[in-house]
Length: 158
Image (cartoon, rainbow, N blue to C red):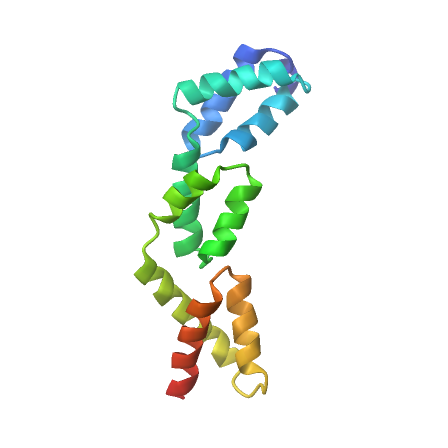
């Protein structure tokens, strides 16, 4: 089926509409798919992407907001990691700032605390426990000050 779509912008646009109606995609993801389907023809691929944006099938703000919300609440990622991943997809910084504003800071802090509590249990007798917990949380994209505060509370409880 994909072979008969090669080179026909109208058919490629229809297929991409179907993809976009099932889940959110950003402009760069759809551009890659359009380029692959149109055998690398940048002008036709750009035209298809522009049509999908005009028809509201693609919206980078909507994508960034859904991505940030999912990664923060489900995956337990911090703001820095989410920002980095969205930047790598070509989302503008202003759009990312707006999407990150949608994340509930209180829930993110609670999520960090739960992540660190669970990780701390697995490191119960490790002499480098604090360092490993810090490194773990920073790798998840949380800020140093936020992690330090939660870590201090967590380690002083015990």
